[in-house]
Amino acid sequence: MAEVRPSFCGSTIFLPMKNQAEFTQYLNFSITQIDRDNKLSITGYGRVSQAIHGSDGLNGRLYFLYLNYRDLYDKIDLRLGRQFVNYAAGPPS
Image 1 (cartoon, rainbow, N blue to C red):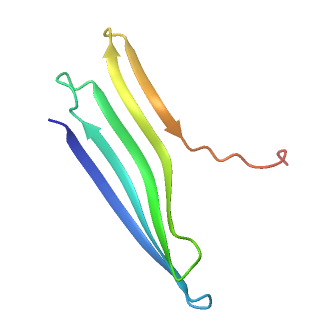
Image 2 (image 1 turned 90 degrees about the vertical axis):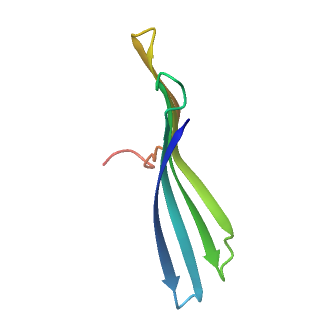
Image 3 (image 1 turned 45 degrees about the horizontal axis):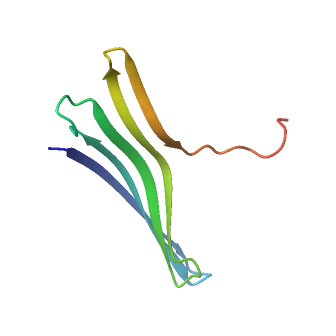
């Protein structure tokens, strides 16, 4: 049976001058023991936010999500997934 280990962290931002608030929930999770040999796992991290009294509705962002498979033919570890990369604009100074 698969084992799921979630980790939650939340925050609330109040902007009294703009009469709005934003509630944010971060989720870091890991799913292991998917297969019998425990070689397959899934890990991810994302955010969900909800603005109250603002124009933004429910927003979500997936920072990373990986499918890991280790010891393929007892020699290869594979990682497939998505990684959020923030590139700076312009040349370095």
